[in-house]
Image (tube, rainbow over all chains, first blue to last red; front, side, top):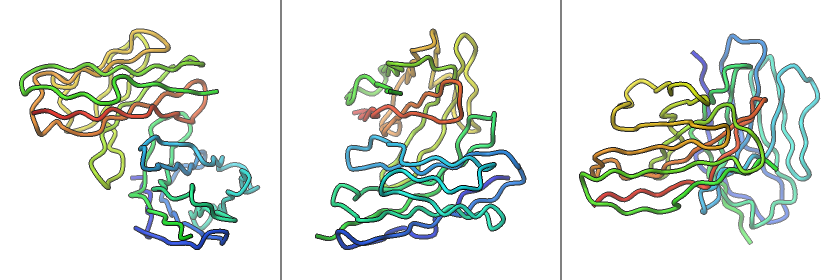
Length: 114
Length: 114
């Protein structure tokens, strides 16, 4: 069975610093997608970044980048120049290509300290 | 682009009544829509998957007669909680996907059953 594990229930980062959130997954599929979603206090789920498994290049979206290690089944999120607005729950998600169903991790609460 | 709306954002109802929640994709056609339930400080729990024009597929343990899902068009899915009871109080989130594997989420509906 496919699983997604986020081992850090809570993380803190100083404003303007860099933080890395961890995510590992388990699957026997070769074609899949990985995502990071942000859920601020409003509870609106916001797509942060998306990675296709067949792409070796790590995805980047402005201050957000991932370190995708396919062999190790690791998918960490790096947030650079952290801002107060980055404070939120971050969920890692996996979907096998064509199934459309997500498997979510348990989330990491990120606190940004001024 | 890829905006999903949900209505209402908050509903309070009496025990035994039914409540309908609407989920709309505003700027794309959603071939598949998903309904999640989220308890405080927990991850999202998938309740069901619906495809336009066909019956929803419910996850194990979800009562399909209690949580009625209708996906009448490519832009609208509804979730009806029938004969609601206090234990049904929760945060319900819908998401939609078009041709790809990315889900876009609505802002959620807080249901309180008195």
